[in-house]
Amino acid sequence: MMRDLTCFGDTSVQIADAASSSSSSGTGVATRGRGKGCTAAAQSRVTCLYQARLAGRACALSVTWTRGALAGQAAAVSVVAADAASGDRLFRADVKPWLFSKRKGSKTLDVAHGAKVDVFWDLSGAKFGPAPEPLEGFYVAVVCGNEMALLLGDMRKEAYRKTGAGRPAVDSLLVARREHVVGKKVFSAKAQFCHGGRYHDVVIECDTAGGNDPALVIHIDRRPVMRVRRLAWKFRGNQTVLVDGLPVEVFWDVHGWLFGSAAASSAVFMFQTCQAPEKPVPWAYLQIFREPQLQGHGFSLIIHAWKVE
Image (cartoon, rainbow, N blue to C red; front, side, top):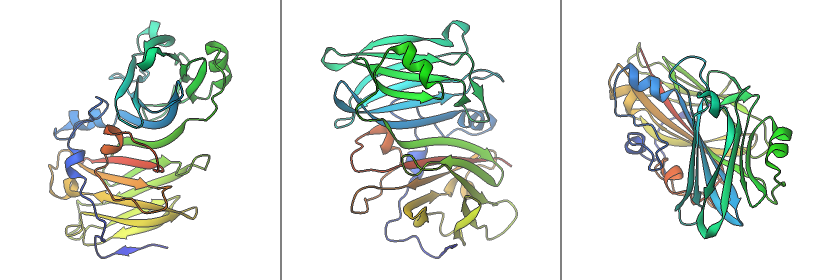
């Protein structure tokens, strides 16, 4: 059922300031810039945050995919690990596979308490779509203590054979995804709101160019689930929708669309589930990536929607 929103709600959150700054881990994209260069950089980056274990310790693994500047280039990959309790960085590994010699390889890194981590990758046959991350034909693996801490991609057998790693006692878990999309009035993304669940099509539609009273409409799997009218008064807010019976809190901030530069304006949306028994107090979305204290939180999809006229 579509919901016609008439107020912010008691738990509305402002996320504009966070949207204007880059991540402290170096994986964010600054959004204060204007013009085509800003939007080109924005649409070329996706960051995924995983809950995993390294040497028996809970950690947050952040994987950032960045599209190369030239068409057909493979994505660059950055893997950053932080302690899940303190947020202290454990290691960072950067891979630039558009260099021929780097499309397949490995790196060994030292982490706390004398442990070592090996990062393996094979992007030599990767196939790409419009997003920076590959669709198929690749793997990226993080191994610690002969155990597979994180494995991405469809070449799972090849990854286990190459690394010689054993399967983890607990699988890694995707807890947040941040991506940038560019369009005129329609912005699309995919999300898996629960571990092992199916992927959903998320479409955000808003035309601020032609009307005096623009409306924001959000569709999930082609079904309209939320509508916000009088957007000039309600440019920030939040509302709960149901996806597969699971409550998903939707936060929006479209201040940049309405009052920013016409050359390159952006809005920020967050779709968040929570496994905690009580509803969490909202926070600036970027804190998820800056302070990866993951216990008790479900999944968050963060979308930077860049509107170009």
